[in-house]
Image 1: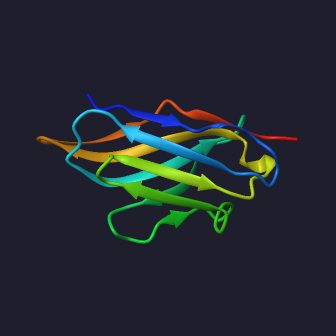
Image 2 (image 1 turned 90 degrees about the vertical axis):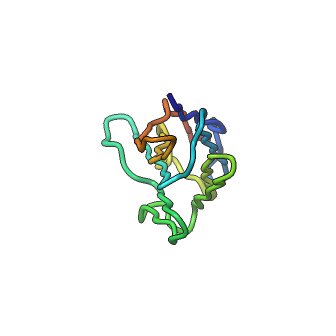
Length: 119
């Protein structure tokens, strides 16, 4: 079955940047939507950014103007450019995909990748 895998996490200084990548393995015919979620310790998982088709991306208020989501349909990949990072951005980031293959449509989650913003 298709799997999502995140990369690009790690540690950044306050005010710094990170770029997360997520690629879907297997055969994917099309992407209905892809998104990034995050979860801080003791907090609920929250939507960070989402992109669907050719529509304008959606962003959580907390990251608007600082993060940019982008989609590469040919590579079945989604990216999250994170700038002006602060400690409040620390957490585990999860990739989500609503994908279409041969005779199926399904939703997938990546295993998550840690982002830490600290001096």
